[in-house]
Length: 293
Length: 157
Image 1 (cartoon, chains in turn red, blue):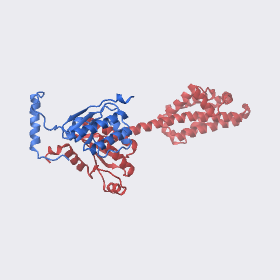
Image 2 (image 1 turned 30 degrees about the vertical axis):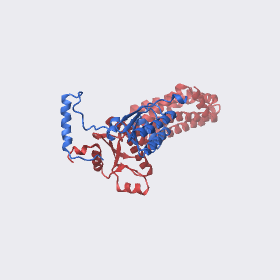
Image 3 (image 1 turned 30 degrees about the horizontal axis):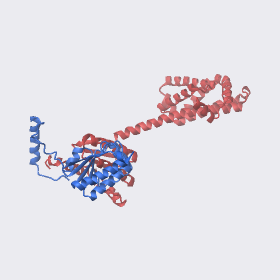
């Protein structure tokens, strides 16, 4: 309740505005069907109309009904929790059907203009037409804000979820021999990703008692001091678990960059090919003796 | 806390090493106690290694790590290398994110691996006369040992 009062305050919607909107509703509710038809004539000019309604006339009927309910409730101006919840619900629906934000805003703007024009065209029917128009516009803005905030929240959630999924898929630390782990590293290596790599690698080392961790960087986009520092951090972490990291897939340009930037890789072993790293790893675990080398 | 109630640490000798189990906290008093114990053990037994069992620690911050590092430098001056055993991954990640210096630090996750790496035990030669082994175990052990014996000896790098 407190939040509702705060937000009405922020949008400067007071009791007088609410009364004016309700009074306007006595006249404008009778014109709602005409108003909505006008809206769909406008929408039909846009690509979004074809996407959502071209093959689905039933959907159009349903949405027209929902629109009517929306405007009826708008002019009731019962700005309570139920009303706010219903606006959020509209936002959720729009987010899930991926309605473009520009269409939504343009639609609300067009609706607002249409209502204001109706008021202007019959000024004598309203106690104070100008103030009524202002009140309506303020509520249109508030209405749009609640919807777009919900859309934005859901879009952010979707992005976070797919980022997470991508990160999960992109850090497969795999045991490839007894005591040897392999990670073919692809893409960006920033500090967030490094935490994920470290956490997965350390738990795999603990689970498999790995002595060597081969990290192949041939898929890493670019090497600079920041990336090198992240890789060095990973090797330090594995060292504290008693597991050596060997970095493979070092290209000639990476080798140049490391030396030219003065990056100190200390005693970290590096090789050009995965095959060479694997050979070294086998020596470390003593397995090369058993495979007839 | 009075100076008298410092937690007592115990050191165990095994071959050329001193082994100390740190327990679950690293207070300033504990660290001072540890330092004194390590240096006196090395002095008495001329240890090559000081093995610190850290698996009981739930948390270590970079200051505590620095203190351990200092103690290991003192031990090194007396001729002994300090080895950490059992640091948990959560602590490791926290310390690495603080960019700690790990130059010259030997650390192992599993105590057995540490003992093997330091040459204190040899896991490749199973004791085939142990009463705890079944006859099937003994047969398997003999086969593995025969295979190992037939390969040319190569130094582990």
